[in-house]
Amino acid sequence: MLNISNNQLNKKVTLDGYEAAAKAFKVQHFRMFNRFLLVFGMIAILFLFLPWTQNVTGNGFVTTLTPDQRPQTIQSPIPGRIEKWYVKEGDYVQKGDTILFISEIKNEYQDPQLITRTKAQKEAKTNSIKSYQNKISALQNQAKALYNERKLKLKQAQNKLKQSIIKVKSDSINLLAARTNKKIAEQQYNRTVTLQKEGLKSIINVEEKRLKLQETQAKLLSQENNLLASKNDVFNAEIEINRIFVQYEDKIAKSKSDRYTAESSQFEAQAEVSKLETKTTNYEMRNALYYITAPQNGIVNKALIAGIGETFKEGKQLVSIMPAQYDLAVETYINPIDLPLIHLNENVRIQFDGWPAIFFSGWPNASFGTYSGKVVAIETMISKNGKFRILIAPNPTSEKWPINIRVGSGAYTIALLEDVPIWYEIWRQLNGFPPNYYTPKPNTSKKIKS
Image 1 (cartoon, rainbow, N blue to C red):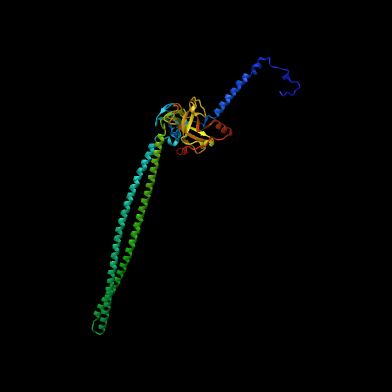
Image 2 (image 1 turned 135 degrees about the horizontal axis):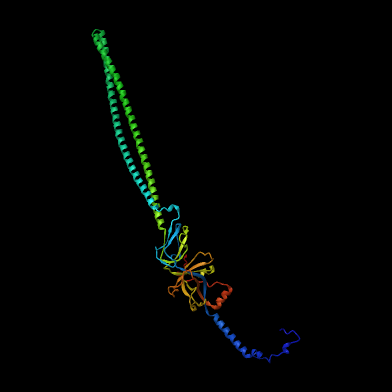
């Protein structure tokens, strides 16, 4: 009431006759309330000076320390049709155990005798290679025989050429002798004619000398013909040598061409054999892929494709399996502003989903139901959710994690930083400042890629 009216009720109305007013306006109540406020204020002031552990929180989930220990799916590298299941969900399997059997759906692989017939084709090609090898060997022998025959023929022709050259020399000498005889016969004939004119020789002697001269002339002509024939034999012998060389060169070249053709066919057959061997190996490996086996010891979680006769494409996920042996870890995410505060080997408190816990953010030592961990990896690339991934492993010097934790369950993580007074933490939170930046020991400050 502002008491601006001329009719002031507080001067006309009194509360002295009321019991409630008597209890409310007792002086003793005011003293007790003042004492309570004083004690509460002192406790609040003392509370502001209590230590408070700064922290960086994050939400994550339970995973494994190494990638090969995480849940995996088994795919088929080939398309097929499910024929038989050998396991059911929840079964324990060892490495190499058959999980299911599939059949072929592609037409080119459905022949039951495919491998046998491919091997038969390979054997036939292998035999053809042997035939080509024998043909090459025969052609090589043929070429050697042609070389030897050409050598003998050339030697024979060269001998004939030498004989012809010698005969030319002999005929040349005989021609010279015939010319000399003709010259002598002419001189004798002329001398006899002169003596016959002087009466010293008879006509019979002249005729004898004339006959002798004609005989020497005939021998000279004959010897000239023989010399020309000998020279012609030399020319023919030289032509024969060239003919033999060209003839056998043609035969040898044809033999070499046939050998090269056989070698080319042999190489083609060898390439075909290699292709058939590759096909045979691929077919055998493909047949082995009809049995889907366990890659490691584990438990069958879920059949992703059920039923008999259901078809699928290559790379399709067929069944999910969880490894039997694994080391637990926690994968959590922090905001980019908090990344400089996290370092390797730092302590982290973890609260697992499903485990009862009494947790005090600023007093981790007073918390109950949380477990200790250490940072083992800090991702240097931001994730799709806009945060950085941190991998936390159990602290070997602290309490063990619960044995019933399953991979994939949720986890709430608190990375412990510096101890500060509560009043400083309240002031920091009101102003929106980040926690105190600090640098740990040099041996723990190095980051690694996850």
